[in-house]
Length: 122
Image (cartoon, rainbow, N blue to C red):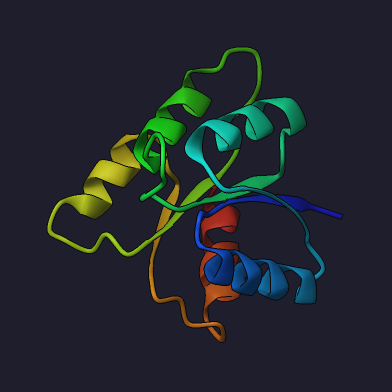
């Protein structure tokens, strides 16, 4: 079974994303801060990471940079799920090392297709 790490500080969003992933047969781990997300990613090496950009300590862009800077392991697909939708935000997120970008609010009927599309390209 593949495992996703969901780095999300909003309990409702975390619950919804986890529910959707479980329904499609994925296991999940979670972190509610950027620092915890980095630590969890480096310790557990999930199959992919869903990453909020606005987090209470370090932002998701810094999380992506720190994960990408870690040595000795192949890159884990990182997918930003964020309400950042201003001009240039997508490019900034991708430049930090994310493989995909999904805007909030998520569409529960489409989000797994969006996630699986990014994973297929990674």
